[in-house]
Image (cartoon, rainbow, N blue to C red; front, side):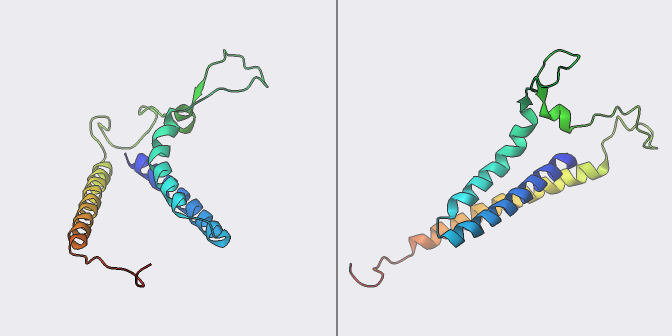
Length: 142
């Protein structure tokens, strides 16, 4: 769980840096910038879900000794080490999860609910304030 959270945070940070650079370039050209951030938000949500499930067909430049079969990126980016090889110095490691994983999972869940509550409350506050706005003209009649 901690690895997945770290991966999502790193991908989101890299996409945010790229969006910041793109926004600066769009500002220099005088073009619209809102679409850059909307694309970044959508990509930061979809990319961690799509990348582990993508398969890649290797080109026929070098003939492998084995048959041609697609390679899943999740198999190339993840190193699976059996627990029998790892010497963690702890007895019965397969039966228990690490306390740090549980802690980070609970913190992630709590922060997610806190952000959801903040968005809902700020939306409700904006809706409440909007109902009290007075309609008028800016700079007189057109």
